[in-house]
Image (cartoon, rainbow, N blue to C red; front, top):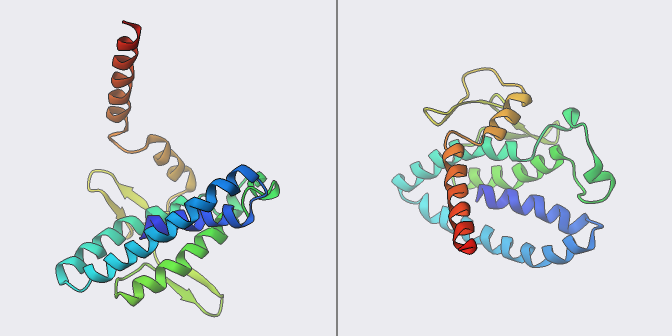
Length: 188
């Protein structure tokens, strides 16, 4: 539900506001499919949280995925150096606006199903506020966010993204071996 909602927020923005015809036409179908995924995910989450064990699993998944998904929307607007996507009409909302739109869907739903979320709505500021260090440090060995430490710099987040995790080298080697094997078969 978190990732699907993020995809829906990102792609809906492009679908609703893009001036680029090929994207808009392709996203008409994707928009409908993502709506199905959202309904399906929410239906299952409602079922899972009725069981104490299921609720614990959902909470663990949220603890892992919430921060990661917040990062998916990219650099905060004040750090963004390139705004061509907005100025050329490829998308209609900034990274921070998209992050807020995602939280506006996810936070109330998680509260409804009684899952703790590290964010809340600040009525006075009229926006969602993240209640933990963000961006957060990540311990790769333990596979957990270090929310008791101070936030990290976005350069550290970008470096982590570029590394793509500890298994990335093995994954790339496996793909390359498969490609080389396929190429050799075609050449024979």
